[in-house]
Length: 157
Image (tube, rainbow, N blue to C red; front, top):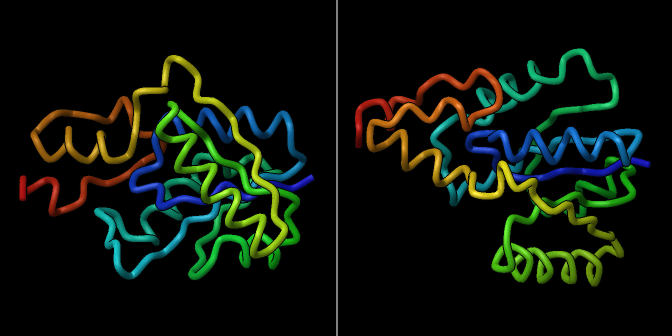
């Protein structure tokens, strides 16, 4: 079975890595799909995210890292995947993710599999990491992979 773990991964956190590592025990293949949204520019370029995440999994043939545009459900079908993989940290995440799951099921018949975050990483989010960095905190312990400090964050803008 193949699952697509889609997100902006701006940056890819230790929570994301935990979900992928646990999903590898459940799925034969996991596609980490970096979604590009022109209305939501990231702190890291898609290419920087792609390279950093791919380097984490360079020795795992069951993991593919790629970027995509458009609807996630359409991308999942193009990849021949069986499910969308989503991590949930709390009840608010679940409610948001359930609406997306219902939509993907309705428009494309794509199922979503939820993995609950590990207690050690449940508080970590990409937005939290960006905010810490913006305020001068070394948040590297929350980032998985070699992400260069983006200029906007390093300048404190």
